[in-house]
Length: 250
Image (tube, rainbow, N blue to C red):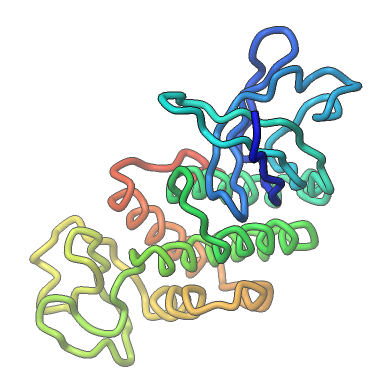
């Protein structure tokens, strides 16, 4: 087997396979999302140093896909960190798990995107030092920036039906089905649209614009944080056509 490539990789998911091997789902910087078989990965003296686990960041050796094969072959993985700070507080770990779930949902096999890879690593590093409120804010910020990068962030500048500018918003409706905000006059068009406050709209705008590190300074009050989570959950559920179970713990 030839033309193996070494690449920075974040382990999104890991399954034991047989007595010594693993199936790994990786987000790599140069190859995009990759899933493959790591033969003998759990051998302590092997090239995987006893195996990999989710939230491990390091360097992977990835072989090209064989014609007709579903799995790539992974020749090794050397972890540089497992983000130990994430395991010191439950809110940090829950936000980190949500980051991985979002990556599994929004990235595509073998579609490299260095922005998403770097954003993911930045989010996990920030979460290692975040307090409980900051962890929730970083999780929301990562989700908003990922949605924006993928072209799915809602239109927050105007009513998506009548075009009325969304200035000095007190309350409005956020409609995933219509693609953005609905003003008071147009709200009846989607009875299932989520009610959002002006503070939630402003938070979505700010978080989606980045940078992600600013989320450490943007810790909204309890009502705004709850409304922001409800808005993102409703939006992401429609985009993916399914809810992400990890958001329940944020």
